[in-house]
Length: 459
Length: 153
Image (spheres, rainbow over the protein chains, first blue to last red):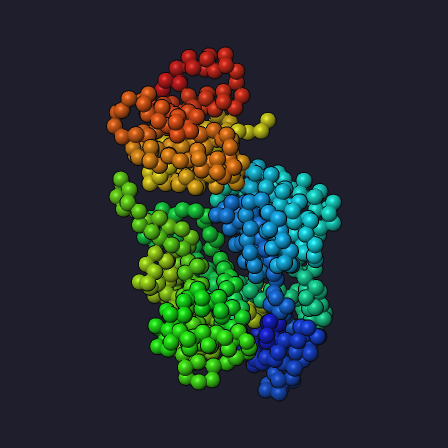
């Protein structure tokens, strides 16, 4: 069977032709995404390029993912920051959304104004364990109902307040979907139902709102958000199939122009003795998105976070050189480094991007002294024992030293408490096929796994 | 009738887990809805859990003698978090050594705890207190309950 996958990115439309009988990639191509006019123009251009290189093929199936037109833009709302608000963010992230902001407690006028200006596709509303607090989620349901715009609501909060929330939404003509609570019991995550509800709304409403219905008309499965395809590919690569072993515990770094996405497939329970796990137990499959860490659109906040002086120290140029480069890229996000200095600076900043996003994704462990002796207190996931680390996204794939770029995600003495991988095998998605394999994994998991293991370059 | 909801846990760096499990069992059996945070619980965790679960009371245990330091300020933080008037109970070995319990009780009462239990208290006494405090039994029933030999271990 010949399958064609298409990924409609914010900049490029990328095609991958796959032969499932031989489990090989026949070819890849890319062309600029043309979402503002007619998205099929860019697709056909890329297809022409592909046909020119591998010949015209009759495809049995066409599959598509999209992060064009801003991707799936969401805000999530919860009650306590470390509990349901955090759970709501984890749920939205795992559905492949770009969560612009997470809010907690009763939404204020200022905050609803902020949501209005973010203009999200979907608002995920949570708060209260089942039978717990109802006041706050109902206040927030009312506040959200007063917003203007074409947004949808997913209600995944206290089941006891569900009926009243439903009537608030109906009264205000808000389109919504209800599902089970993201935190039915204290500290217990249940993010799958919310993930499914977000997915349903994406298929039902957002594909056409983003101008993708022309694509939906000729593809053979529902279009999925690109990060969800990556999420599925990562899970498959980690767990394997009945016939083939996967790579086990792993992490994936997808560095982009606007965001950096990190995926971890690992239990994350403590690897050292005398360690107490505190706070919310995070899920086996976790995705985090750093909206302020990107190599072009988000270069300025990234460099501010990393500090231009620190970048200068590492790369050997001055902080003025760094800031000039930031200026240049901010003015024109399509800038590519042309001379040695720009190449080194770009490479160094990408290392910081990976390091910062790894720090935020991984858990922490701090020593505490008690009357019973020394103990470790762990928050989040312990990813020190992760055995495989995969890099994807332009800045990593096109890096002059991909291995060095990826390695900056590992455990370092600079930040002793961060539970980052200590000694993983490093892999590179050189052909940029990760999201394509996620699409393929739904119908052909064994083929997708085989191709990933064959095509990813191991260092 | 709505079940009374209790958030329980062992505060501070204290890892004594057995008593915590016994309280969880006893309170649940007595008909209360229990959110058990386990051991090494910070004040913030008690408060977060109480907000999220809409709890009626926080029941703090401390076994290792540092209770006074760990428990100080919980009432003020509850007020700040909007948990006005939530009942606070504390018990265990909440101070070091065999100090005069009436002084200990006064200290903790001043800190804003509604009831303070001395070492060796039976869970049945606190259950009886919860029932009285939340209007599940009358004063007379309470007095009758106090005569029960289970209360005294």
